Picture 1 (cartoon, rainbow, N blue to C red):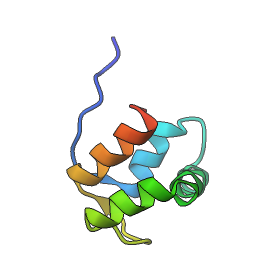
Picture 2: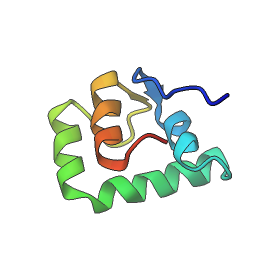
Picture 3: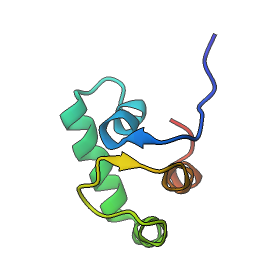
Picture 4: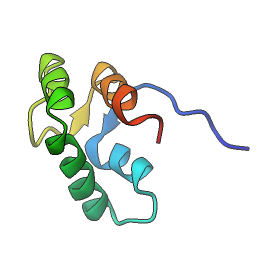
Length: 73
């Protein structure tokens, strides 16, 4: 049975791995970062929520913004 995705704090690499489960943590983080960098609207919304590049922990509100943009992993 699949577990439902829960909005909570996630490590950046942890969330990236949920979107790229067949990748290493490093590769997943790199690709996830590309997705974020290419989406200007998402970057602005994340910044409004206090996100800064190189942050290791994403808050629940930041995770919600990401999921609203990309869908659940």
